[in-house]
Each structure stands twice: as structure tokens, then as C-alpha cells.
Length: 295
Image 1 (cartoon, one colour):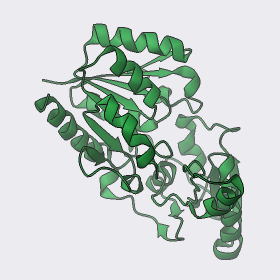
Image 2 (tube, one colour; image 1 turned 120 degrees about the horizontal axis):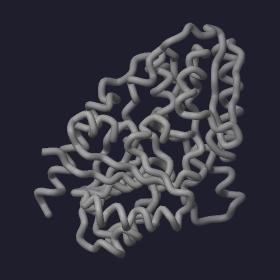
Image 3 (cartoon, one colour; image 1 turned 180 degrees about the horizontal axis):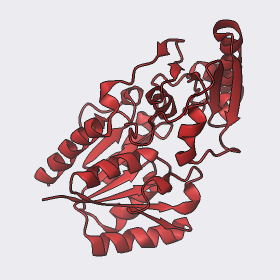
């Protein structure tokens, strides 16, 4: 018998990819999100299971109503502790899974832990291996970000002499400059740079964009790492805060036949076997059933 799972999601296409696979396996899955928190239109990849609201206030009301009427076995929250607090405040005993995707937990477990303990999560999941640094020894699980292999399959021929760098926020100055140098001096290629906050590429259009390039340069600086010191010192040392794991965009690029360059300048052209939706959901189902058995 399938589970009833409610995903509450702010900005993670991982929620959509996992939910599609969970549904294929017979689980009843719903995703709730604030429409305004979806600039990349990830919801369009699974319109049958995504339900949207127009504000955080209406999202709060929708979450409470959905839990009451849908009666999910598990509530799975992506990225926002504020949403988890809403759920826990009203529903004291419902199994609650927290899923972190990056700067919301990277290098700041020591800051988050007092709050996480109060919320009594049944499990905490992280989406990249580097996020495990500093995590508690128990109750935290790493599930590799899955690539939607239905969507990210090559359909057109691209330009074999161009590289792409996508900047994800204003902190990426050091990464952008390094990408320019690498493309010019090592790849000997023209480099296109897209600043995604002002050019939010819709999720369903990302495949066609990536296919037009030969190389994806995956340099990312995590400028949101918590630092207790002066801004001047932080601005200097943050240049070393490279995101170690390949981003999901880089993995999607590899799935389309591009070469991805990681922060150590290592080339990647083969998608790891653990990046399929099936692999991720095998792990997720194991966590869900474990949680329910220990209730």
C-alpha cells in the first residue's frame, strides 16, 4: 500500500523529481508551494501534483488545511525552517522530515542544531555530500540530487566550441572571473555568462539552453556561509568557500552530453549512477518506512 506524502517546497526542483518517481511507485504525493517562490517555474514539470498559493500567508493556511484533510503519513519540508515551525506548532506528533539543499545548512550545523532539536524532526536529509560536514552522527542522511532523466535527454545538436557559466547570485564574482580565465586560457572557448536572478531560465527550457554548449563551468562560491567577524574579513576569505559537489545544473548538463568542470578544474563527462530518480527514491523510501516504524 502506498504512502501519503506531503512535500512543502520553496525552491527545489529535487522535490518535483522525487515526487514524480514516488508517484510512479504508487504513492499519493502532493506538493505545496508559494507560486512567487518559483521563479524558474519548476512546478510546470509536474502540474498534476503541485498546488500553489500566492503568498506565504495563504501557503500557511493551505498547509494546515492540507494536513487536516489529506492526512499524510509524512510531511517533507524542503529548505525553509519557518514552514517546518508552522507544521510543528499545530501538529505536534506528525512525522516531519527536513530537507536541506545548500546555504541553509552548509557549515552552520552548530548554529542550526538548537532549533532543529526543538522541532523534533524524524529525519534530516541533505542533498550534497559536502553538507554532511559538521552534521550530527545520527538522524542525518545524504541523498544525491537526482537528475530528471526524462527531461534532460539530448534532443538537438549544439555548438561544440562554446562554454557556459550560470551565476546564481551576487556572491559569484570570484567564480565568474575564474570561469572567464579558464575558458580563455585553458578551454580556448567563447564563454557565455547568464545571471540567473535577472534571467530566470524556466526549468522546462533549461534543457534546450544547455544543449547549445559543449562545456559547463561549475564554479560556485557559497557566499552565504555564516561568519562571525567583520565584513571586510569575510569578503576576503569567502573566495575560498567553493561548493565542492557538482551542482544539479552541472549534472543536468552532463546528462545532456556536456563536459562539466568542477571547482578543482576536473572534467566530468559521465553521469554518476547514483544520480537517477530511482536511486534517490530507493533511499527516500527506506527513510520514510524507517520513520513510520519508529513512531
